[in-house]
Image (cartoon, rainbow, N blue to C red):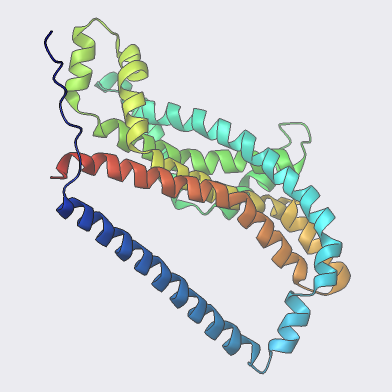
Length: 288
C-alpha cells in the first residue's frame, strides 16, 4: 500500500516575519505620531482663538447654542428642498452632459453644426459663473412671459442643469477620447453601428476613466444647490437668512453650513476611497 505524499504547507520565512513586524510597528508609530500632532495643533488653535480680543463677541454672534437649536427645524426643512433639487439636477445633468459629449465626439463634416453648437455651449457656460446663470434664467426667462409662472425652485434647477451640464460634458468627452481608437475599430469590425459602439464600448470605458472627476463635480453641485436662494426659494440658506433677520445673530449660517458639510461628507469620503482604490489597481501591475 503506497503512502500518500503531501506537500508541506507554505510558511513565511523568519525574514518575512521580521519584515511584517517592522511594517506593523512603523504603521503604529505613524498613526500615533499623526494623532498626537493633530491634537497639539488643534489645542494651539483653540488657545489662540479663545484668547483673541474679539472672541467673546464672535462667540455670541456666530456660536450661540440657543439660537442654533431654535433655527435647526426651519433650516432642516429648507435642506430637504436642496436635496430634492440636487437629485433632479443630478439626473438631468447626467443626461444632458452625455448628449453634449456625444455631439462633440461626432465625426464627419456633416455633423459640424452640431459639434459647433455643443462646443459653444460648453465654452460659454463653463466661463459664466453659476450665480449669473441663475439671475439670467431665474429673472430673464420669466420676464419674456413666454412660459407660465413657475416657482423659483424650477428656474433654479434649470440654471444648475445648464451650468453643470457643460462641466460634465467636458469630463465625459475627455474620458471618451481617452479610450484607445482600436476599441472603436474592433467594435465596428464586429458589425456594430456608430451608436452601438458609443453605447456599448466607448461610453462605459470612458466613464470608468473619469469617475473620480465626475464624483468631484457632484460634490461641487451639492454645495451650489444652495445658490437657488438668490431667486427667493426657501432652501436651507434662505431659511438661515430669515432666522438671521429675526434674531440679528449669524449662528443660523453656521448651522446651515454644518448641514451642507454633513450632506457632502459621505460623497467626499466615497470619492477619496474610490480614487485610492483606482490608483492602487492601476499601480498594481508595476509592483515587483
